[in-house]
Amino acid sequence: MSLSNEERQVIVGLEMQKARDTFEEIGILAAANRWSGAASRLYYAVFHAVNALLIHDGHEVNTHKGSHATFSLHYIKTGRLPREYGRLYNQLQAMREESDYNCAYDVEPDELQSRIGPARQLIDDIGRMIQA
Image (cartoon, rainbow, N blue to C red):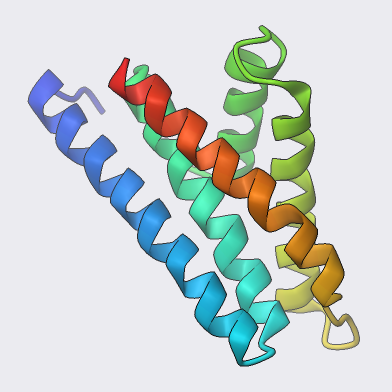
């Protein structure tokens, strides 16, 4: 799919807004001790921010796996973003999948809370990259 610059800007803006809105939901879910839901929202907040960056830079991605692979190839392996962000994105996806599909898995509050700050930083860094 080929996008005009204007279409690309609109979609990037919508993806970043979705990332921010989704990130806000984490606090609501955490306050209600809904850790699995909060883990899912944390992953999706980062996912939408990553997609905004990929779209901004002209990468076409249609799947979660494709988003991860393209992000790693163009931003982590090149050093444009720190390796910790690649690990974080992978950890969040694994946590989300376990919490969504494994009824015996409970997200540990400390495990999730330790990733909220780094995820916020990643989203903010992506926002700055898009604005530059």
